[in-house]
Length: 316
Image (cartoon, rainbow, N blue to C red; front, side, top):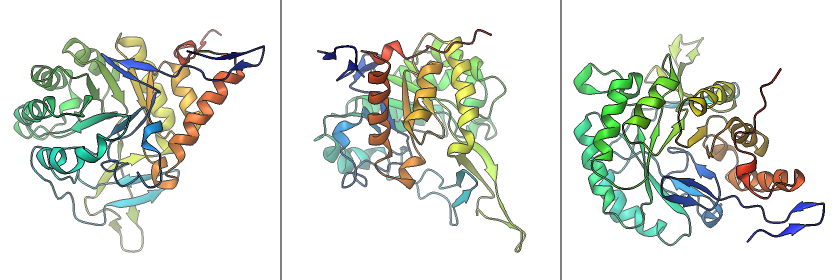
């Protein structure tokens, strides 16, 4: 029930949102790769207050990632070339999932692979894992059978991954899109048609940084993924394009540091948001963002976040 105040607004606005058949108590999620497996942040953040925890990307087998240095701070952001280091999907289920089950928060497993078969096998494994509420599919990874081109760079391969995963699981399916494409709407439409329940965007932009004294790249991998406030305007534009193209929910990601940042995405049409780089700066950032969203809804006398989502006025 939503409690209202006379002329002042709403004490407890309804923040619940739905993705597929999954109802989130609020729209604030962690972004994969920035929150570990949740366990690492539990001493500093009340996980029960979050809408969902999206764990770091999981592969079929354990992965050691790239050699260091693999993180570099940049103006208003950071580059990372961690290389998707993780313990593998089976170890995650056995070693990390039991800890996460104790919280009243949705758990979303992010997966990636280098072949369609790897994606399918992980989806099949996770489908039967107690405590996993949804799957997020990272299609920014190279398709080793197609010359290393990212699955998400072409609508055909993006749809192929989505269909493969959809065929192995009944869990809500979120497809995470790469921004390194010509037309984000085309990719979003392709995965929607292939069975995605939602799309999340954007993943990191490809960038690099150079040590001018050594005349060498700062990252051992040379290039890395750029995240943080520097990419937020690009992310917001792509979310706007995706929202106008698809009928499924869009989850906004990219440089969200404050409640004001998050509100831009909701107004633009995002159903939910994910917070990433901000977690490195302030572990409590998501809770501050959540409080700020509630304060905004109260101040504008909105009883439900649905009143805010997609309220952008572009009339001139």
